[in-house]
Image (cartoon, rainbow, N blue to C red; front, side):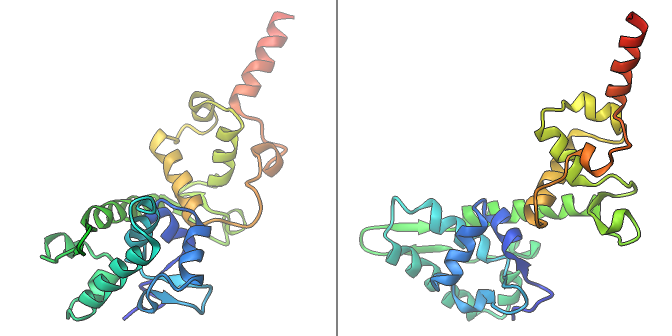
Length: 225
């Protein structure tokens, strides 16, 4: 049974499916996803199993009609709902990797297998969990802004600085703890846990803070003058 505790947000579903939030909301609004996968209250939440179905629906739009894609999804949900371990499928549990289940749906003119979509969604789910473990939201740290674990550095500021053209070397000079992987974690976290408004630039968030690279540049100019 789908509950608030084992469901995920639209943004998290979109990340796992590698589609947009708008795509996921469309699947809900147009009743393309079965009701067993959706909690419409509490800000609209979905079963993680929604992700591979979403990927399948949009990635095969040029090969299958809308009605055919909907039949594939409904057929598999009906098949899954008969199983005693349906809840594990809803949450894309790791145990499913060793469970024998027929993900194939066929009609006279076509045949599809959803297991590759399920595997891809599961891997993105694992990556999202890894990223989330490196980010904390503590009301006592930077007012609850998502920060890199063990620091007071908001992940949005680092991503915004990188998007503004700052190189990894420059970011590393400013924040020695940073790694390429942590920056990727920050990007993933922000995609699956979006906050209202655009990320603030570092200079906007902390006008009194100068990056090490800026200080070095000023020192060099003073030395050469």
